[in-house]
Each structure stands twice: as structure tokens, then as C-alpha cells.
Image (cartoon, rainbow, N blue to C red; front, side, top):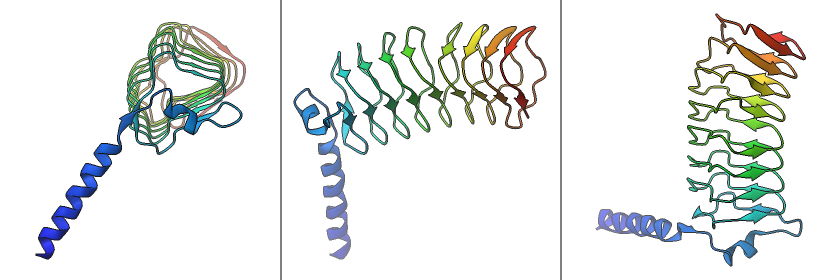
Length: 201
């Protein structure tokens, strides 16, 4: 009898958690906005965001089950999607601040995304970056399966590659700050390297 009660209780908990998972609509958004226009959804049960969403401040979807960012998303602050199930960011997305994707499920960063600050891919599943990729701040691909950087990549801040699969650099690249190898051994260096800082092994 006790086993039966326990089983029924577990089933109830599972069905309750599933019923809570839902898309976020334009009315529910008002419950999560603060006076500065920040949209805070950390640990919330939402699975998607409305198309054309404009966030006046920061957007925090960390520890959520949101797998795709909506078409036409515009964030006037920062995006924090750390430890989320985020897999896809659509072309045309605009984020004026930094992007933190630490521990998310993202595998690919398409072209046509505008970011105004650093991009943190640490501990993601990232395996490709678009041609002539440009980052306005630091770039971290620490502990990712990424094996190469695109030719003519521009990183205006520091570059962190420790624990990635990168062992060669492209023919041409620009790093405005320092390159932190983090133990990675580089067997092929760029013919054209514009480096504003130093290389730390």
C-alpha cells in the first residue's frame, strides 16, 4: 500500500510539473517586468517567448526550458541564458549588451546577430561560428567542442579558448586584448595577427 501511495504521489508531481510548463504570452510578461524594463524569467516554467519581443532592459532566461529565441527579438540590455536548454538563436536577433550562454545547449551561432558586448559560450555545445565573426568585447569558448575559429574573426576584447578543441588559428584574426590559451597547444598561427595584448599559455 505504501509503494502504491508513493507511486501515485510521484505521478502527481510529474503531471503537475508538466502542466506548469507553458509558453510565455504578452499578458504574463507584465508579471515578470520590473520598473527598469528588465524581464526576469530565471527558474520559471516557460518554454517559449512571443514573436517580436522587445525588452527595454535585460532579459534573463537562465535555468529555463526555453529552447529557441523568438523571431525579431530585441534586447536593449543583456541576455542571460546560462544553464538553460537554449539551442537556437535566430538571425536578426539584436542584443545591445552582453550575452551569457554558459552551460546552455547552444550548438551554432548564425550570422546576422548583433551583440554589443562580450559573448560567453563556456561549457556550451558550440561547434561553429559564422564567417568574419565579430565580438564587441571578450569571447570565451572555454570547454566547448569548437575546433576552429572563422577566418578574419575580430574580438575587440580578450579571447579565451582553454578546454576547447582549437589547435590551429585561422589565416587572419584580430584580438584587441589578450589571448588566453588555457593549456591548448596551437600548432598553426595566423599569417596576419593583429594583437593588442599578449598571449598567455
